[in-house]
Image (cartoon, rainbow, N blue to C red; front, top):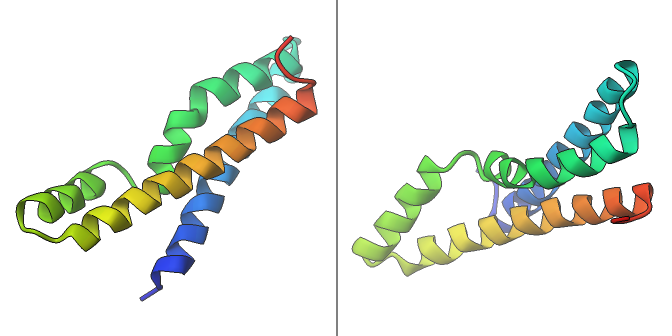
Length: 108
């Protein structure tokens, strides 16, 4: 079983990779159909961010189950752990979004 710190890192980079991959491959698809790839990349990065977070934490049901057990059964440690996973995935998605903004020249 992987430790807490290892899972935080994996969750961070999963969210990061999901957003970067979706935006870059989406931009390639846009270029193939003669749409503006930069605008498509920015639009996809904004729209995919929440899905990258959800994918990184492994879906929503396991997270809600951990919150439920933590809140109603007194396992505060489980709630804090899940909250840290959500923050880690949010940070990974946000970092990717900033990378894409930098690559495309920002919001114009």
